[in-house]
Image 1 (cartoon, rainbow, N blue to C red):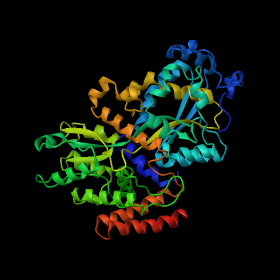
Image 2: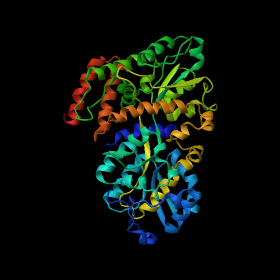
Image 3: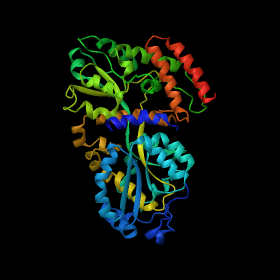
Image 4: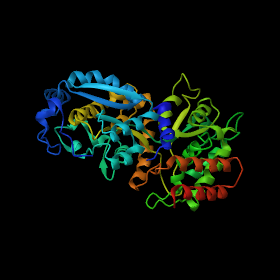
Length: 463
């Protein structure tokens, strides 16, 4: 995901967070119109990729599907696989790729105008509640369980649970297939930890203690680096540790503002105290500056997006590429938690070529093609990929990423979205980040920042 993968957490925070099932396809699909996706027959005709491709080609040869996707490494990788898909299935694929800041508006305009231009949509996990509620996208459960439409080699259960359950569902139903995602974890300087006989942090208390220990331990060395720029970046940085303390901006069940909840205040205080051990200009850091501080050897630890691990391990851009270890986000007083964000492929509810479009989704996101997708620059979402020996050798952070995703699933199982769904989310995060930053600068205490945040957020959300 690199820069754009991490930017989805920041850019898409600015926006607020079904018709009958497919089978009603136009053109050559007309004879298949009565097919009920729930009714699978036998997987024998589709038990291999080649056999499946033959059956798809018999039904949909010459059909065209249109896609609305974001400019993204995963999109580029899928495009590399498109030629093979077209040859195998006879389905023609027309890509429309745009900057992610325009993608949502384009998709919603297509839906509200009932144009039905697109068949397959690239959907941010934070849009899924809105898209599901408005019926912009098609529910997929009946497609997933149909053995004819979704052969065993697709292997839906191999998708990491946090992604499968946390970014692609609305109201208990699947509305997308995860294609790329990220959580957050710690990178630390193994050489420094070994030199001073230290172990990487397993708890938040250890994290703070180690940040204090390494801060100034050597010339030009700081204890930690994180994103903390005033506004949304500071709010995002706080959220990296907040749920581990049991805190939150709003109660996701009642909608009540919880900025003055003791657990939220404790998390804010921890974040402010932690960043006293960061570079002096940390209050201006986005994820890019935080990453640079670590890869240039200025910090002993870094906590941010897993998607940035490849840049930390890249000899061409990192001065510490061969000196780094990774651990999940440390456990807090309220247990384990970790960030969760990602992208999906979804079926447009207005598509006239739903089964042909679903064939594209199956092929591109299958376990069968997962390794080729990752090797082409795609971001892994499957357990088997994170455990692949060859890929782990190339990126030793994979096992730790998988462990961090398990921690992210803790929140999912509690029914908590890492970024709380609210139509005024951008305003919420901006104001929280403003006051957190003010506390970092010493303009007010953490308690004062919490109270002011509480007042402003109550005005924003109306509670």
